[in-house]
Length: 93
Image (cartoon, rainbow, N blue to C red; front, top):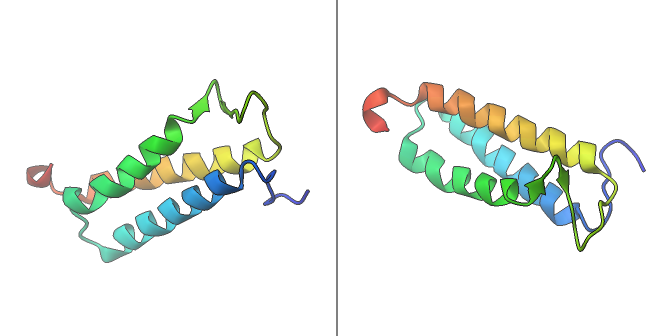
């Protein structure tokens, strides 16, 4: 498996995280994101967070290969959210 490949069971999570990161990067690039724009993407990220328990994604009792790839994407998404939140004016919270 290459560095960016994951087990088939983790592929949907990886794809979802890549989509969330793409959305977050678009928001960041807009220069003036709003809380209303961030909230739906943040909710998607929370849904992935709920699957990440004890620092792993467990699928049907198994821990599929590719954990590091998905964990790195999850971390990147959280860092982007934090950066975007800093761009949102305090009166828009």
